[in-house]
Image 1 (cartoon, rainbow, N blue to C red):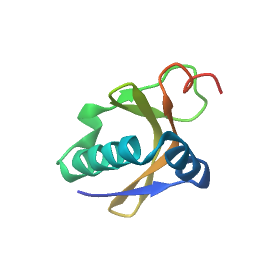
Image 2 (tube, helix red, strand yellow; image 1 turned 60 degrees about the vertical axis):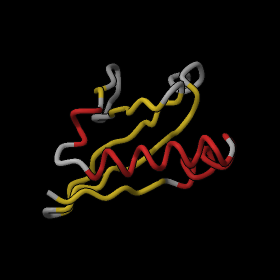
Image 3 (cartoon, rainbow, N blue to C red; image 1 turned 120 degrees about the horizontal axis):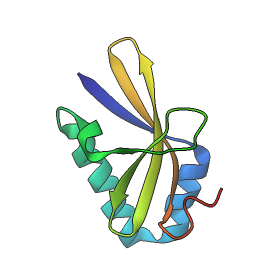
Image 4 (cartoon, one colour; image 1 turned 120 degrees about the vertical axis):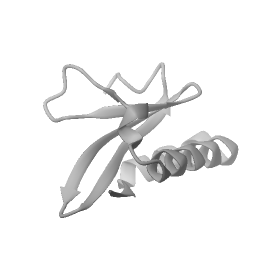
Length: 90
């Protein structure tokens, strides 16, 4: 199955805020996850969310995303990227 990632504007701003080194590490890890046959084996489903929302862990950062299925292409919509102490507050 084909996977692609899509970053929301707020996720792009989150990447800009955290610095180039960490942002590069996070985007490389997302690309690694998407390159595997089943990236969802690295994800954890979040509880207490109205829509199906998941997270990837990259060091002390969390990537919050949801899945959008368009035909055979599954798009991981990256919603938020933040440090673990801040990511679940909003």
